[in-house]
Image (tube, rainbow, N blue to C red):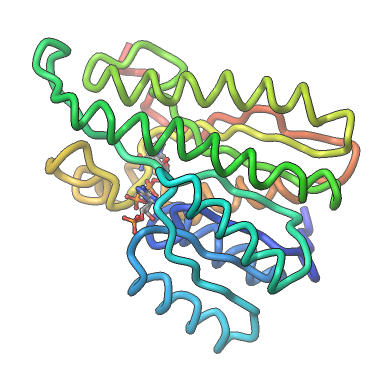
Length: 246
Ligand SMILES: NC(=O)c1ccc[n+]([C@@H]2O[C@H](COP(=O)([O-])OP(=O)(O)OC[C@H]3O[C@@H](n4cnc5c(N)ncnc54)[C@H](OP(=O)(O)O)[C@@H]3O)[C@@H](O)[C@H]2O)c1
């Protein structure tokens, strides 16, 4: 399917690495102006400079999605610079607290829910008015962990289950206004994502044994670009042996 984001404006949270970075690259390659959000300014600035050198318009906005004022400022700056938003990718996420439920630190619980739940809410609330104006697309990055019991990290799993419910309820609210809402559930993507200080997904899986972030980005681009009138409501993109865990 040919994708065309020429003239579109995309806001991507968690754009400093992994799936978000790959998504920003993919959308920019198809003509989108991209607004890059994450906490670390260095990788965001580097990516913005690289995309600009390739001919895209890119704006780096260091943002902690746990802070509602920072998320509001992110969207305001996107609109001030580019005049609107056509695509929102709610992707920033962490997975603290991968231990027995009796031992989970309150700080890890709060870090996970503040990022994956509060942050997703703040971003959605700020983006939706602009997506209604543009009849644009909102793509949430959920997880396999939100669809099935996830004993290795129950708080992370529950945060993604919340996101799944939220995404579908938002889809039901804004579909009438012409906004497409998609939920992507990856399982096993070779990024720097790690539970606590454990090994990253890129260290855990050999190339070819799991999903590359570019493959998730391709699916996000497809969901965002499917065209007015249709919605890829929910898409699972798993390692081929993901369901062997059962
Ligand atoms: N990798 C997998 O196997 C997998 C599977 C299922 C779902 N997912 C989901 O995919 C999404 C992206 O993860 P990834 O695999 O690409 O991992 P990653 O490479 O670790 O990327 C996570 C991104 O989230 C950003 N982030 C974290 N906390 C943030 C905060 N408070 N405010 C703003 N940005 C924040 C990080 O940037 P900063 O550190 O610069 O803030 C980074 O850009 C997450 O929601 C994750 O739950 C991943």
